[in-house]
Image 1 (cartoon, rainbow, N blue to C red):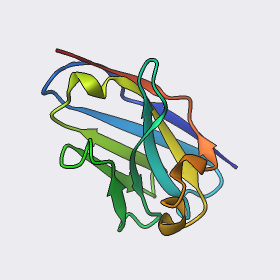
Image 2: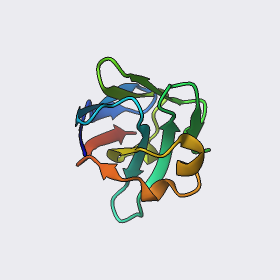
Image 3: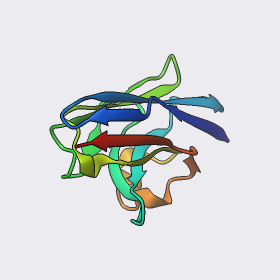
Length: 126
């Protein structure tokens, strides 16, 4: 079992940057594949990025590729999402997720990840 708490959301102008954090507690953090998702008002939850337990493997949604960077610090049990060049369409609640399966397996169905945080709101003004 692992508990996930997101932080770092807020209001930012278009073109600006934010860094989200997801702190994990409970079981050991290292073996978990970690991911970020988002859900805009009135829309389905959307995949954003995922990172392998070692940090050596990452995968991004086309909509954020080149603008967002996922990273992790296993010693701090934290995964990050650096968001640059933000756009109004990035406005959403951002969720962190964790799964014990390796990255390659998670990518087959990332919406099926085992553990989820409660989310942090990011609002990008135009």
